[in-house]
Image (tube, rainbow, N blue to C red):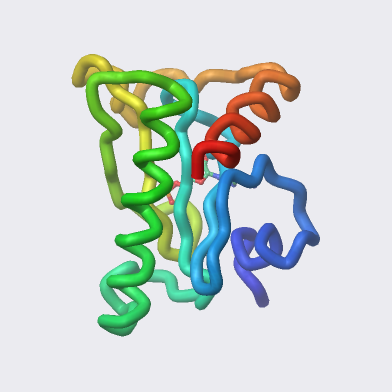
Length: 130
Ligand code: AMP
């Protein structure tokens, strides 16, 4: 069965889309640890990031870099933090989070719940800068 993220790429499940290229896709995390928390995924469904081919991995990382640049332009921050966990959804994904201090990227604190309009506005802002 297709992963929830493959179903998002296929348009079967809605998302706040941020960016897309031939091999990769980015959208807002539905339970953000901070405003502008983005997930970047390869279109090829692979559970474990390091099972991607060298070409797929390189393509994803260059895509991640472009998304991070657009994210920083949209939501100015000290840095954009990057993390890979992947224990919840078995489709490789890279978390990008705008951070001003270490605790902004704490995956164990209570997640934010932002209004749909704000999520849409953030996604559109990043998309414009991509
Ligand atoms: P992990 O697999 O531990 O890296 O976490 C998976 C991430 O995917 C979590 O941060 C979830 O909030 C996020 N997530 C799960 N389902 C969706 C969805 N339908 N849309 C956006 N983000 C999601």
